[in-house]
Image 1: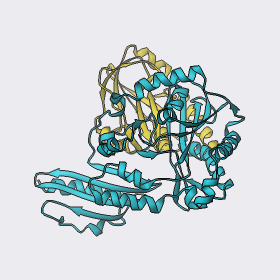
Image 2 (image 1 turned 180 degrees about the horizontal axis):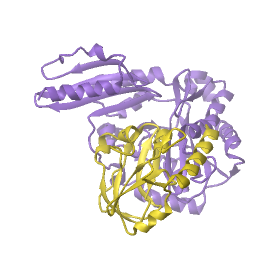
Image 3 (image 1 turned 90 degrees about the vertical axis):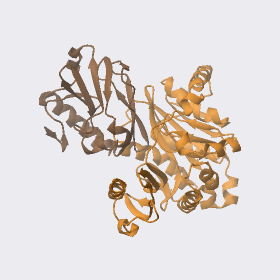
Image 4 (image 1 turned 45 degrees about the vertical axis):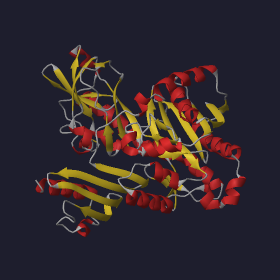
Length: 327
Length: 141
């Protein structure tokens, strides 16, 4: 199997390379880092609903919609990408997602541990240090291949992430940023700025290649070749077009933003003939942690606190019933 | 029939990619089987392509996401997509809750219903296949 150590590449190439490799049906591991910051959204996400596009435009932050699951994420040169591409019929590819993730996150955990960071897999597909997330991942079936992509987090810019995200107001954005700062970590945070800075990307790539080889088998260094470049151009013509990136989707009344495995911030807004009904809440493992409700004319008749500790499903069902009750 | 704790209704056809097919007159209804929806976990998005889409057997019909995994739904037959389950747009979890009922996914018109013969049907065909799948995934787990 081939190993592509691409080094620092353009933001476009940091995404196009694995999409193209998969379209070609070629297996391998790509390691790279983007030269410029950008925002990537999941396949099913509508950037207009997920991102503050005006902010992105002002900051010159490009937006890319990947053919992989998961949510919107801010990406920059402080993240080292690993991108696994395997054919769907490869024996290591499984319908059992949990087993697949556990198998292919082991190398990432191994690298962190080799650096002295006590990371572990946080189901279903996060890597965490004492519950603080230290990697983002996503998977997708592209062409005849499965891709599994993620990053080794040298440092994560929570402010840039929070600013790029579309938020109903500054309170939601502030709350999101605070949660991110509390619930995410990085090599810089774990090792200290000096030790993190002393680690070269080359050294980190060496560790990643070694660890992934223990799962994928021997990895043979391979340069970006003409066939791959041509495939990247072809894929780029489609995936860098506004028609692909900004494909609209139906607005959902319930907006849910992930902070880390199991922890979400929610914003629920639905119109009733008397005005909008709004709920903001956080949930951990499907249970409501905090909630505030607002309806036409101020607070809704029910006490928000009665939903704390209950399931998210029960709360959203109650919210729908409230909205209908205001007819 | 129940196989290893998973429900596989007798009257359905099964695609080895873990989709079921039900014949309704000269139309087909399809969805994800119980084994696949269990292993996939919470389904969060289902692509609902436009009706009229031409379908090629074994090729991508749509995409579905669960656990940050963007998977493919492959067409079990050559033909045309004639309807989608619109409820899945806002409630994709219906697949987890009732994969053979409210969580149905697509309605198709097959060019040749004879192609159903390539799918699995009946205990003699379905049971060994499901048992093999269970054993395979148990080893991985």
